[in-house]
Length: 83
View 1 (cartoon, rainbow, N blue to C red):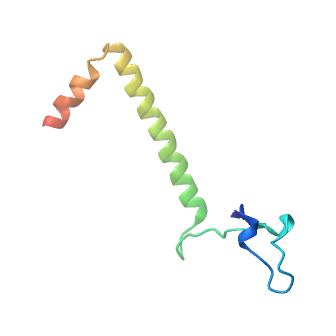
View 2 (view 1 turned 90 degrees about the vertical axis):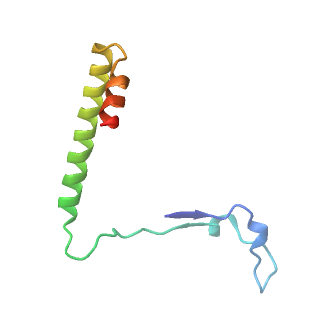
């Protein structure tokens, strides 16, 4: 996580009364991975990759059907949701 102080005049030293310097106005701290205890990170990444690939395939199928059915897919979705 990176934090940058844009208005350096708001942060003034008690001793000198000078605003914070440019080199002290940027902070970079690493953020640890946040997963529940007992959860394997590799399994979560594998599931995320599978879900992403599945979503891409479904979007491609919907696009192909839209082209083949020449716009009638919206009507078919309307029928599907009315059931």
